[in-house]
Length: 420
Ligand code: LLP
Image 1 (cartoon, rainbow, N blue to C red):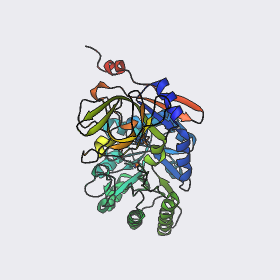
Image 2: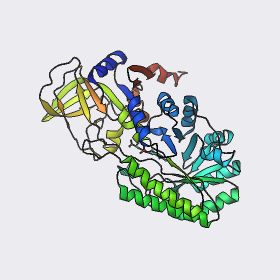
Image 3: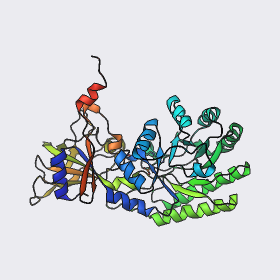
């Protein structure tokens, strides 16, 4: 939650819609995960290069899922490579490329820059091995079950396209050996949130996979717990007990060390946990409307900026920030919606599209709404729908505030279509 005076200042200086990130919150989340040997940021949650630079400076490593994310990470200061050097270099690689497929352009980049790759399919292993013998790889395993806040975010089981199916691990290992690829570690991104029984099931599946590697006469050097640590979007949501989360994975790591007879590095790969609570979206109230019994506030941000409510029915708490300090009036139930020419452009809805009004003090045109906990998959998932430019981003660090992304101009968009 932003300090109201600061929010007024930022909205006035930079205009709205405006993404605001707080560096201190990011630092605090990193500190909570220090037990892990490696914290690898899943940059898809917030790929702004200044956010990446902040994390890089804290010793956090990075995951990339596209050629663009590799180039961003490099620009932000992460070093590339490690896949053709010693196993210690591969285990310590600053960047790991995780995917279920490699398009041709990315396969070129991965080979040229010797990026350690986390492979989620047999075809991907085959294509990489043929091009780059000796390449160091992780295997991403789909243990046959998943978890997730909606069907669209479930990361395991038959209904998920991700990872090498657990039953095909022996085949993957045969392929790996035949192609001369080198195994760095096993990775499972299931994302158990605060469901520790579920997490225990994931760690058991991981140990089964380690045993399979051992039985195949191969070795490995690291385990990755993936991401999926949840954040409390609603006041009643529990926070992840990071010490407990670590202790479950640490116990699994120790058992795996017994199976293999040597030490293993333990990684975690969160996106949301490191950045969600650090971010807010500020938007201005432009219209108040009464449609029958329902009250609406229309603001100058839409699902082109923040798509999570429209896409998943995700809940984001909101706060009214008055244009100038004033006594707040009575609260009311309001539907908060955006400017897009689309009925689903509503921030207060559930996964079925049913309206879920929020309780806010009465707003005037010109006041601002802070949409909270939007630092993960907020700006990252924005689009240019309705030819709305990407919003500006600001990073607050104590008393220091700086613009970390300028507002896109319509001219930037038109420039892509030059030649008319
Ligand atoms: N590692 C892998 C391989 C992943 O696929 C993901 C997320 C993460 C790590 C990070 O997960 P996190 O810690 O952030 O939960 N757009 C959705 C989330 C999609 C997550 C995709 N993969 C949302 O807004 O909730």
